[in-house]
Amino acid sequence: MPDRRATLRYALSMPITVREDDLDSISSHAGRTLEVSTRSVQFTSDHAIRPGTPLDFTITLQAEYGSPADTYIHGSGKVVRVVQRSENQFQVSIAVSQFQISREEEFQNPRSFAADPMAVGRE
Figure (tube, rainbow, N blue to C red):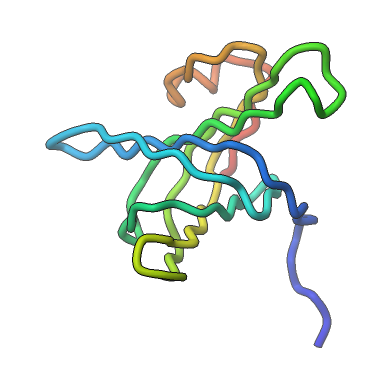
């Protein structure tokens, strides 16, 4: 069966921080990426995140990958799948709606991406 993916996925293990922002509270969780593409991110987490949950994320491309300083991929999306791998280990897949590559560690509000020419959004 031919691969029907629209974009290439890269098996990369990098630090990721995800931020859930629901009406009651904001919570952050750390994990490691498993696969990354321009349309999706798959990562491990020790927290179960409900499918359909909107979230923001920051992936850290550490300087050791060829850049003189850390680079950050800030983005937003929605959880599309969660697979429990062990008692406290989950594999989470996000459909990415938009992202921005930056040298700034602080996450920018995704709503400000539209004004940034370096941001990439999905229709």
